[in-house]
Amino acid sequence: MIQEYQVIEHNYYRGLNLFLSKLYYRAPHYHRECELMMALEGEADIIFSSGKVSRLTEGNIAVIGPMEMHEMRSGENGVLLITVQTSFAMLEYFLSHRISPFFVVDTDISQLMTKEEQQALRSICLDLALSYPGMPEDDAGECFILQAKLINILINLLPRAERKNDDTKVSKLRAKTISRILEYVDENFHQKLTLGELAEKENLSLSYLSHAFKDTMGISFQEYLKQKRFENASRLLQSSEMNLLDISIASGFSDVRYMMKAFAEIAGCSPAEYRRSFRDYSEENSRVAEINQYYLTREEACRKLLEYRAKFRK
Image: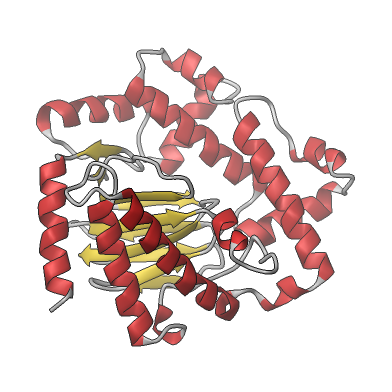
């Protein structure tokens, strides 16, 4: 069984999310925000939809663009990460032009950034974590200043990372189409959805949309839809007493049998085993599959952040 511990409570500033987590595995997913991950201890492989695998090691930072599908795997000891997500709209506010919503930044950013830029990002990640709401240096003004510094670095970084073919009119139109479809799926995954219906809605052929979706996201439409339904079902298994039939219906599965098949493929266990594992964690500190997150004490988060800030500033 695999687990992910969340250390900092996920408070919210407009355009900025920040948390620190101990991660062992994260199923394929994407974010609408630009995401930075700094490894404080341990290592992890980041597997992109293109098939590229990049290694994130202690002290290094990964930068992942909005809508970039990726999966994360670590070893038995996991990887302790600071994750900073900043709104893509926030970036565009500071630019004189729009950037494609799809761009790639490899996790090996040493080829894209100077040592000074990397060190600046490390400092920003740690300082942001400590000045975030509820943390010992809680300071909204400092958070704003640090976010502005972060955005300045990203503005300089993104032009080095944008996909070349996004300069074409066709690619930009396709990116907008996929963005609309993702937003629609995110809001309606609990209902019956077919790619054919979405193709008709977009006035596109089923064949074109099927290939465009897989080329853009790295997985098929059906795999993406199954992942969204699994994530919703896993949350309901954790947070509610709903029976399996009701959870399958609420998550968009046609029946319990299909939900069980999805859990076997993604989590390696049945929904009932998944729920038991989650409950066992609370009582026995056992490991739980896939994307579960558990809050640790704020005191431990503060201690770790202060320890690593001192370490990385030496």
